[in-house]
Length: 543
Image (tube, rainbow, N blue to C red; front, side, top):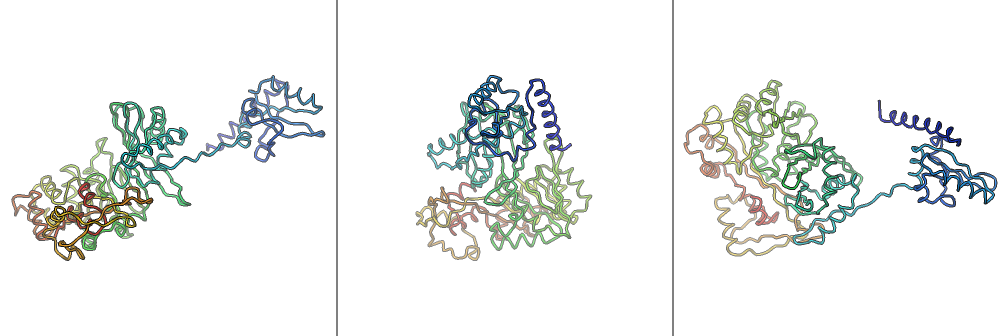
């Protein structure tokens, strides 16, 4: 039965009970449903708002010398108050009629007489380093937010600040709230333990996890965000873990907007973009995304999937968990915490005749071998892999699957990436680097072909630094991708065939730089700093 029918039945039952009680008390009964939405409110002269709340009564009609003053009383209205009202109006030569109304009717009418005031809370401001006044101010706001609104307020504010994570951390006497904005964690507020218990209760009920568990848990929340006349769906992944002082939580925010999953929006340089287009245009082979958590691997993979998502291709994904939902693609969750493996899932979905398969992650030998076999039997396989660089990933993959000439042509492209904060163009400022920095830049970019760094003179260059702006409190706004791409050519395939015995990352990188023009992550980041897109300090922090 739907909720409306249930509510109607409850109200019918309440009105019947009230009518019977009126008969017992010898009072007149009235069903307020007939007029409660249209009643002309009596704003003055009969009862104050305080009296209505205190005595559980509402005015129904303002009388005069010709018509009576009418009131609605409930079963909780004191008889002494009713008697005093009768006496008061009798002394004035007027008539007061008191009707018994249901508690439901009283509540509806009180919402009209005294509607709840919508509290507008201040927006959260991210504190600069050492700025305790802002943290104190935000803490005060957060501790004042209504219990039922606290979780929604935090999520809405994190989305407004374009934060990727909310961290809720137990300290000995208080709870610290931090948000990750553009890859950097910032303290936001300290909240009271009582507020924390309410917040964790709300997270637990909405993410279907226990707020008192003694083990780590994962959950998921979806929330529609309404801002500036538009609505977008926010996917929120919840991870909790018990700590010394209580249960900590991290909420990862995924702003679901399919239109943003677009390779054109990632700022990939022309040569690297052409290499990606070439690899994914073929119906077979394997492409691997490499990098730590939070390096943007998923966004790049999903953007490639979105580009491949045409009516003539069947695309299947195996993910733990599914971070973005994309129409036209069959996405299959893999629950590795309960014994499922990517390898088992992959073997199953290969029977469904896919053209493109995406694996959330290659974690073990079985998955690696199954994925490689799929890639040489007419499937395009995309996957992520944890390693620091493309050469380290290639070396580790050889360690997992062994030297195998049959597999030598399977892996076609490896991409390692990091996200670095982007300088805010209207406020950034140019400066002359010192001699040590100049020499470091020259050494780092040694061997990079001149055509890969157009407009850059290594004997005469400037660098850029952030400057605070009202639209960019730290001088940065947004992030850019720094990418290292290794196209696996015949020279690099020799390591997998066993033609070159020592398949260590340094040897593989040296061969890739020599034969494929590989630009390493640190080189790509340094070039981005020379172009004024970011700073050298930010590149060294992220890479």
